Image (tube, rainbow, N blue to C red):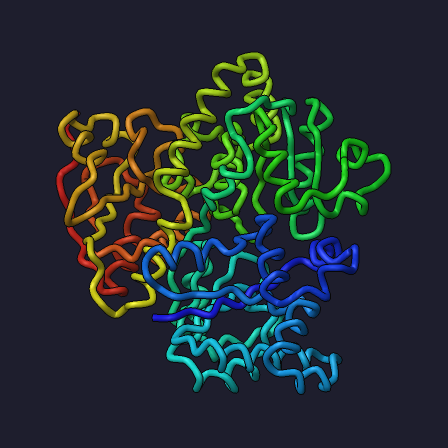
Length: 471
């Protein structure tokens, strides 16, 4: 296995990278290193993690014209005669790089950027074309060239499959090498921060942040701030954009930092800030999501909120009790470094790319009501908390996200509204369990229990029923 990873960087970041004009005339290898030195996006975490596994890989920042032209000067100077209009030159250079690297897997980080026609053209050069997505999709996007699509958005798995493309859930992670450049045990001069996008695709989250900023001393950085109304409290608190190392440094200097998910995330936790903030040791306050408790223990490793008022109340408590905030931050960082680094993600990626080999572990989804969970015997709960060699268990429950009886147990939380069935379906799509077990009679809401069984049967998942724990 050998990967060529096609990535794109935000235009404003590339402009800043080349602002002094000197970098553009450096050798390609030096420019290539400069692109990843600041830790922008996923950086070169993929190639680093894969390399540790003995899998050769390289990242290509395909929309960085100066970088790509530097490669062409050294390897294929005739390509510089091609027109830059319509991406003709950039696509020709990328094709040449694919022929040069000879990958078995072409891994596309930005599926909105590469045209389907280009992918069809280069597909004979590789064994697999794999795409990854965690952002809004362009209208009319042709996904037919992809052999596999990976996404950190659980509800996108089924949507991609409905278009005839194999798809799997693949969470984002944290590059632990950032801790070598930024101390997470140093002084934290920022009491409360937000670093991220404002407005646009984040309109719902921006409204929430606006309400919080009106009540709390929130410091704000990120793109989109200049477009906010002049009377906006967020606009008045906005201190400019912060990319790569600047952003990481702010998180490393924050006692508490806020997170909100992009609008398209709907009811699901997925974004990079979950891992960046916790990885850098900040106390993360994030929006409550159905699958969050599979990633972090709510109100123990991260703090959750459902409304601006709840966020304000919890942040006020954390500001008044900095030791509590620091303890949550420490637990969150430990969880990220234990379970969510890119080194660990790359091992998962290799397994996904090697399918259809059978998974190393069986995966059981246990449908369990809050009432049944509260009467769970100590021995049964201990077994759920204990890593098993041959199987793992995820609980699917209508219990509250922070239900004490399920603390520490990986779980999805089924909402008590019209989206319950959708969440159940997304759970099955993302987790791909081998078995679904329902506990009865357990007070489970029949409005989602029966669809759970039906969906599982349709997907060829074994379904079993067991008696609930006695009260």
